[in-house]
Image (cartoon, rainbow, N blue to C red):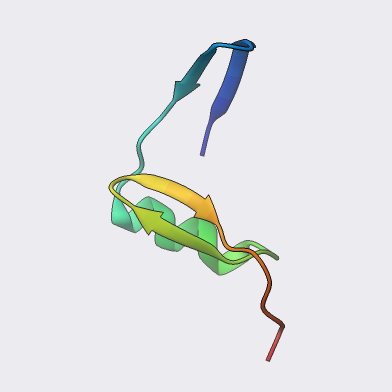
Length: 48
């Protein structure tokens, strides 16, 4: 997952495959949602 901000109005995003998302999600302490190749951090929730 790569997000590089070059200026306040120019954001570069890299789309991920579903397999790449799953690999990242296995080791991430946060939970995310996969939408059309983008990973969105989920708000709220608990470890349970």
